[in-house]
Image 1 (cartoon, rainbow, N blue to C red):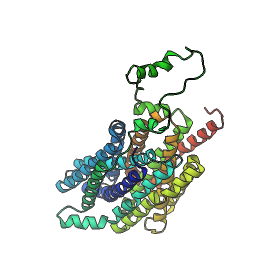
Image 2 (cartoon, helix red, strand yellow):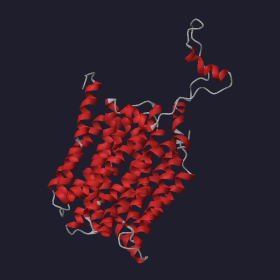
Image 3 (cartoon, helix red, strand yellow):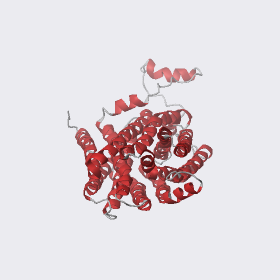
Image 4 (cartoon, rainbow, N blue to C red):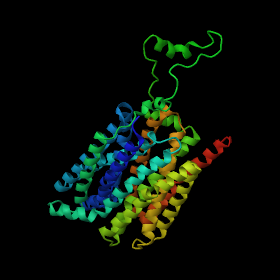
Length: 441
């Protein structure tokens, strides 16, 4: 078992770098696609491509974590993101639009790896501190994620000075940050393999259990099979690995696990759908790229800045209550988004900040509830499947948000966000009823 302090320190530093990498590119991705294609409706495909890429690699990264360790999976994700940043730069310089979407899809692997790092934190956390450890790692993303959008104008100037097209320069910063993340986790981070955590969780267990005072032959052959195999010098029969979709299909039949999954999926879908159209909405009303960067930075502060408090609340009052608080905050953010003018530099940042805070409550509360509501053998496969479902839903939201923005404006985007929260409310009622022993059809 690696030292908790060292592992958390490496994860914290890595998340800072990854935050710069993700936020630098995402802050201008929609604007870049709109510039290259000349179509506002296609701007949402920028975030959609990135989120879809994150969804596609979530399950393979989870499998890689089981087979080779979390550090290998995380390094692979960040290396793919670095490759994606390079592809975006090359595509924009050449004017080949399809390559931009391919690069953004690979770029999404960085977000997938960053999200899986939250589960890595729980694997080295002391009992009862899982949510707080997760929140510390997420909080570390704050500095990098806030700095990324603020560096958008500087990155754009650097790119233009190097002869690159406008809005491409920030991806230079992304590529460098992801390259450093890859080196850091590949060389310094070591975590226990998820498959060995159940064994490591009980290090003080005796090598041989004491024989009970029972008549000989009362144990079944199945119960004695592992011991007989060990006595014969062979390994105990290994349990069949659980696949991601098998774990997912099993979990959705349990009200508590389904509530956790929908907390993650719905919170992320709402956040992505509204956030990705905010820069397009603001620039269409004449606001500068610098002001867009400020608003996105406030949004990211909401996402990560309060995460230690959110983690503390989860450990203190329980995940379901924190999820409910997050859902209420998301509703408030959507209502402000419906009513606020695009050039209101008080209400628009407030809405985006609340949007990030509601996401934080849903993600940390849902991830903690997911980890504690299923058997250990299902955790890593289910985590990968849930992240894949979360990103697939968010990819669809990002793709449709451009169409909704063109047809119904920014208010329409926020109305759709409110509708996405309805399944979460239904799942909350079913989970509460099941915990009280009430049958729900």
